[in-house]
Image 1 (cartoon, rainbow, N blue to C red):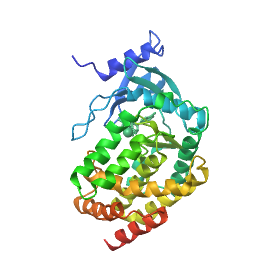
Image 2: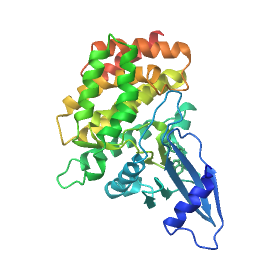
Image 3: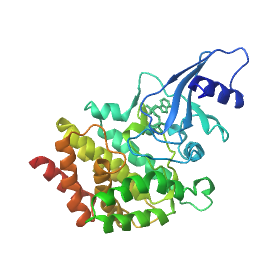
Image 4: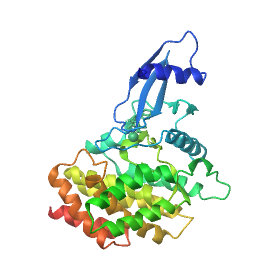
Length: 335
Ligand SMILES: Nc1ncnc2c1ncn2[C@@H]1O[C@H](COP(=O)(O)OP(=O)(O)O)[C@@H](O)[C@H]1O
Ligand SMILES: [Mg+2]
């Protein structure tokens, strides 16, 4: 018999010693998640956020992902707490048996989810800069000698939940672009020099005041920094396509994020990373139309637009982000 979310939360909090015997508990599921059961849990007047990994994701295509990724996520959050404590949720414990963990519930009048703000046309450039700065800090810290990469040898999971559904699957629908996409997929799979989050998207970034909190790190692995950058910039571009009134601003967010990030690149040549970012970004754009996880808010004409912008950029990549943004701007301006 399936166990209710509330019972699972109760059992996890009990296992972690967070449930006084006389305490009342209530759990309310949080919306938005496709990969997990996640809930706001109140124990007396103490609030928690409890998250369990789902074995099969709630998307249209069959997409199974190992539940151990819940530990990768917890480890990533712990690592960020040591690198950037002001950008990290408080953690209360993880259970390997339940594939669940407990963290602080972010709340308050100055707390918001970036996706909600951007789709409502209220995204701000300072948010893009804050994300770029934070991402670079985390990436850079993971390349310093002595960094403990042992919880993040997750390339196989990363292949299953990122490389296959976004790149390999998309290549089957665009056979002319498949060689370029496969080259990138292979390179991403073998890279292991930087700790990446793997799902840097406005739906996984909350702000409290001026501080970004990156959540949902279940794809975390040692990998290539260009993945996190391209993944996030792709979301800015798709939102620029979707919200015409903020089109120019949201495209500018790409350059703003990169400007905040680039000065902190210590582990490799910045131009090389930028060139990989510019190759991967149009592939991810295409993947959000024809991959296993299509973006839900684009209408048909905008989906077609994304395919026509991204395909030539995959075929003939440009080396600089400013060029790429300019090309996209021209396309959108003439659409
Ligand atoms: N610690 C938290 N505090 C408050 N809200 C949260 C917290 N973690 C996640 N959320 C909310 O729940 C949603 C889903 O959480 P997420 O970790 O992204 O799950 P999934 O893996 O299912 O996408 C987020 O988009 C956010 O709105
Ligand atoms: Mg999420």
